Amino acid sequence: MSKVVDEWMGRLKGKLKPVGEMTHWERMAAAFELKPTDMVPVAPELDYWQITYAGYTHPEIYNDVDKTTDACIRTWADLRTDAIWMYVDISHQIEHFIPAEKRPEHFIHRGPNDYLLFKPIAKTLDEAIALYEERTFEKYGPGSRPATHYTPHMLQLLEFQEKMDRVVPIIVGIGTPSNFAETIVEVQKFVRWTITEPKAKLKHYLDLALGERLEALDFYAEHARKNGCEFVCLFGGARTWGPKQLEEFGYADKAFVDKAVKIFPHVFWHICGHNLPQAMEALTRWDGIQAVQYDMPYYSQKLSWPEWFESVARLFAGKRCAMNAPTTQLACHGTAAEVKAMVRQFIECTLPHTTAVIMPGCEIDSFSPLENVKAMIDTAREHRS
Amino acid sequence: MTAQGRDPAEAAGLLARLADLVVAMDVEGVRREAEACLAAGLSPTRVISEGLSAGMRSVGEKFKAGEVYMPEVLVSCDVYYKGLEAVRPHIVPSDGSVSRGKMILGTIHGDIHTVGKDVAVPVFQAAGYDVVDLGVDVSDDAFVDAIQRHRPDVVGLGTYMTSTFMHAGATVETIRRAGLRERVRIICGGPAVDPAAARRMGADDASDDAWEAVGKIGRLVECLRAGAGRRAS
Ligand code: B12
Ligand SMILES: [Zn+2]
Image 1 (cartoon, each protein chain N blue to C red):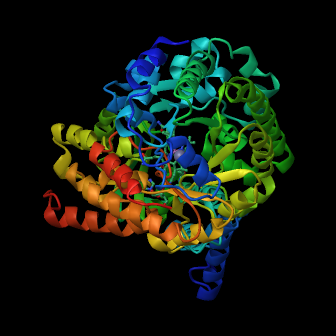
Image 2 (cartoon, helix red, strand yellow; image 1 turned 45 degrees about the horizontal axis):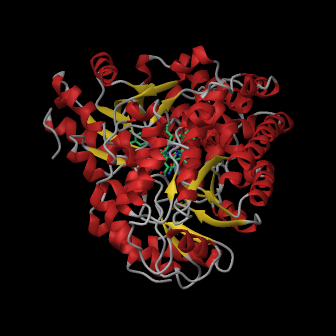
């Protein structure tokens, strides 16, 4: 039972006007299941943006779970998107690998609207392997932000979801093995090591990361799924890999997906950046993923936006729901008219082939103007699918 | 007899082999071959520009054509540096090496993305610029200090997220307040940049592609030199 949730229940329960014929939950679930919806769902990953929107600064919410939850619900109550993403920052992901006294050096706040800056935890592959072999994440787990901030915030939002009779789903974000293996040492190092280090050694490291992530899924089964969580975003790493890396090291993420989809009914994958065609194809083969939040065409693909949207929609036809538009960049630097045009373009290119959900390929930046976020939502509301 | 004076085809062969080794990501090979080029009498400048840097350029072409990917590009960058390490001690001032301009480049405070910078710096070096890498999470004051110390033509701001890109304005303002704005041209880089927004914030240009940025930097340097301090509009 949490006070912040109960306050919002008092304000919202039984008082919300329906948006369309379906509930937000039904709309998202239908799109994921490739079934018709009354409107194209819209579910932007609002992360830091909603903190600012709700009138808080990041340093302010950093140590205050109630304010974090308040920001998420307040933003949703005003904008009525089709899902509420729980707020996740990098400290929620990796702090349990760092001893308490060292944590301040690892996380730096730049300003009131900024992402949290972090420093890598291990410098060499040996150090990274030792972190896992010594199970540091277990040693430093209690009292770290995954336990003190991430989990309570998640539980509050799930409590809201259930008390609101599942009118709107909460999206819980979970990092994949490749994401963790890269973040702990820094992507640029991991990526180089795929070429310069002995394969068996790097695989050993990745296996350790996979092991920790599979254990984490047991935690999510117990604490998220049992509390009603159905919608899960798997944050993929591996976004600067080539096809060779995918072939040699993709197995860890695949094994992770196999377990996640057995626990959660609605699983989607987050692949931001320049999307490697082979990775997009793999995501249509990894069974159980229902939707993919994708981003930009790969460097070597000379495609216009409509061509890109259409090529993905064709690839996903009968298999996956496509999630995109506008780009994170356009949401921030573009005009409302440009945002509208891009969302329309995405919908028009996608719907002939598969279902669509409107959301940028990565989180909305906190500097993005409100009118752009509104333009995205309004445009989605114009389209039946 | 030296390779300079010997068969030009032989010199070309040596340099082509060196370039190929950058593409092949062969650290040991590059060092050996660079030394072989020098031993054959090729000037350090030629070894760099027609060997190592030519290799980096072809890495860029192959990357854009989808023949190699980001991991290979990063390792090729490392190999390029290993080659430079072997050649640099042999450079003498009278060597005739001409830099196309001096640049400082760093990832702006609040941003830890480094892959882009790790690629952009060697690409700019291979294009003939003298680049000082300031590292990641560089404060506005550190940019000012670096301008005073290195006297660059161009300042590169690595801004890999929209939020840090939006701080480019503050960095430019700090440079202006230090009285250095007229001395330099400023270009932002990273996947989230937008040239028009960069200009609105007081920078001169922006690019999300290091190979394309080479042309832009060239124009900025020309502009700076022609305008003798006046900013490009
Ligand atoms: C890998 C990656 C990471 C890695 C970074 C590892 C590292 N040490 O670099 C990790 C996982 C750690 C990471 C963290 C985060 N990331 Co990140 N990341 C990426 C990703 C997928 C690839 C970046 C990359 O390496 N690209 C390959 C390089 C070669 O490309 P590049 O950087 O564009 O560089 C090229 C050009 O821009 C140019 N260039 C580079 N530098 C310069 C400099 C100058 C002066 C010039 C002229 C040109 C130039 O040359 C390069 C070659 O052409 C991008 C997506 C993308 N589209 O790139 C997101 C991306 C940059 N990340 C993003 C975000 C949001 C984050 C996080 C905040 C996530 C989070 N919630 O925690 C944190 C940031 C933490 C922080 N405070 O810094 C967003 C930024 C969104 C936005 N518009 O603001 C992006 C754009 C993803 C997206 N589509 O939204 N990320
Ligand atoms: Zn992302």
